[in-house]
Length: 291
Image 1 (cartoon, rainbow, N blue to C red):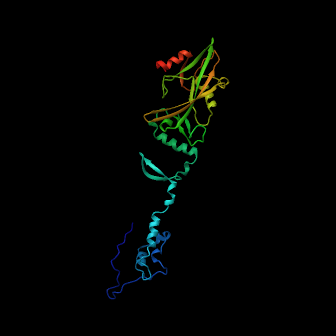
Image 2: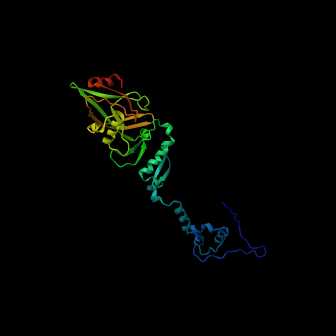
Image 3: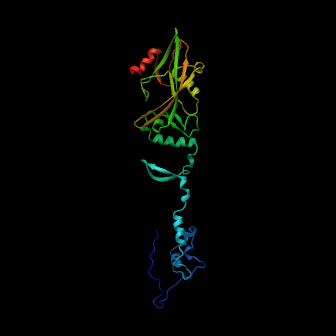
């Protein structure tokens, strides 16, 4: 920044001792001679010229120039609603304009931006699957963006899935097929599970997703899985350490041919083995904790 030291008094050479006055500009307010647009051309000579101009016609009580500067420093107060608080550790540290990130107006753009964040903190989120979950206010509503499935509970995003009971009838009794989860699974390894279960990813209906999972996890052809009956939904909230898990499970029942034996098709390793048991025996399993 350039600086200039003003002399206390500007005087003529010693011989004359007459005060030098610059010629007054032919405007009523010489102090407002220069606009912001011309401020770049406003030099020290201009400062001296304006400051030493003839001020006989100036009214010392006219403070409009000062008020204009005060107004300029406090402009736009009516636009405060266009900004949202910027919080760090629950403390407001600033304000950000709602339109600052205009490139994040589309769901796909938001998905890429959030995906970059997930990639940066990936080590803190186990079981990254590269599978996107839709983020909505509620089921069936417009999608704001999509989020890595494993990250959903760390953001408290409500996630949806399909779970299916597969059963057979023999000699007048019903037998329920159970799956045993792979020991390699990041969640509930080695535990018992429904015959078919899976998260509901972006861009697929519940029924279509169920038939896909039936093929992959239990080798059930679509000609059979298409007969699955919707029997309701279950929701729960599981809060554990950094996770706020909000799940909704759409439940189905499917009667299988008496001789059907499920098998994993090798495209996924959700369940490594299957077994069937009659309903009374299956109901005992949760009571003794073997699940």
